[in-house]
Image 1 (tube, one colour):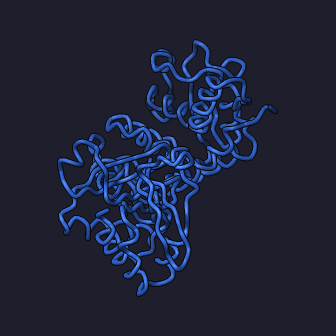
Image 2 (image 1 turned 45 degrees about the vertical axis):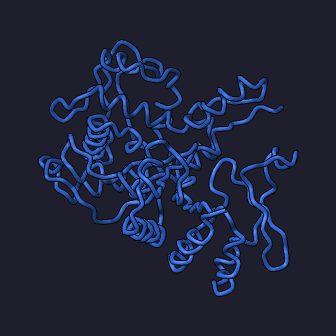
Length: 358
């Protein structure tokens, strides 16, 4: 098989995962002792676009950042390389994160303590990354032949000196609150609480913060509000490349990771709703009065799992709708999943209640 840059696909995903920010967002006063709020927000906007452009370049030209070529050799190497390709786009910002945590401002200069940097066991083979960051406006003094040596490193961003100050605050906050991913996704909410507090990213925010539109966020918060009023218990339930939030009818079911009834999932920043409808046939009469957007959910069939092909699938279901026979497989997750619409939320809830029993 031809060598490939598998990292390109995941760079696009990481770019989508950048948290969309508002022109005005909360900034705790602990971050405005050196900069004004306006200066901080202007620097943050520049940083956000830096992240976006770096992920874009890795998508288009991964060799610029020294990303490795991959090829399929055997199953073990395939698994390892897939894992590497998923985390590969983070490499430039992981290096930057470790540089920031290993350094301090000395007067107006930001100096990285090389001993602290080595203690963090940061990534190797970073010459390409340093060179690439130079194309984005950073300068690094103290490198030897473009690589980390035994000298301390001075980092500058001449076009806007506030950028280093804001990046340093972001790194320190992410490190203090165990929110490294929020640094990698350039999350504006890092600034809303003091340096040691992170009162965000819990509950429905787990999914909502990854959405790109207010419409998607409104769906999540409305679903969350309605289901909480109905007495549902909820917790984070993520899967592979998706951040999710699931709802259970009983606390005991939730605690033992039993079957959820509803699951809101940010699948590579696309909102997906899962419904555990166990008996679609009980929903058919109700569907007659539903809009086309809801009826379409029941018009789609799954190919089914290997067990179905053998005729022994215990988790799927067959039903007849509009004169056609359909199959839904429920081995891994709830059988009905789709992109939800806010106007259809009452129908989703009613359909699940009707189809809950086999």
